[in-house]
Image (tube, rainbow, N blue to C red; front, side, top):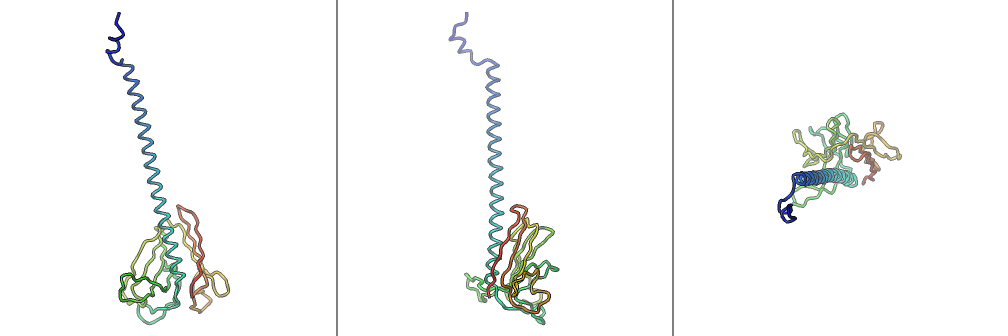
Length: 205
């Protein structure tokens, strides 16, 4: 008869080892799956956070430009005609072009505080751009400085509140020769991440 001491010193049986290994593999797989899930959730959260920051920055750009809109028209590239202080040109993907004041100059360059900026919507790539020029009255061949500010834009619409408190789809209105600024601007995004976003901004001046 084998003594209890010898039985203990004989170690684990094959079945016990297989059971232990199976438990270890199960725990390892569960821990790996849990870690992968946490990493995936973290990546999703970072992407959503980046999308939200881009949306907030874009809204801030539009609000700042519109609240500081300035009634200063500009010469065209050839110096022959005058372009309104604010206008739209959907045929050339220009959702909005405007003159604005309050262009910050922390580096103290030799320039004014007025800036000519525009918003372009690329329907093919679902991207909204904000461009600006270093001078108000640009010359032929001077390219705008381009900035991609928002992606995943399925739709982008802008409306303008005229002097009669009527919303217009373009500016200046087709039936008006006035080059005055609108009373307010309403812009709408349809985003693949956050759905519909609408803001109304009172225009300065």
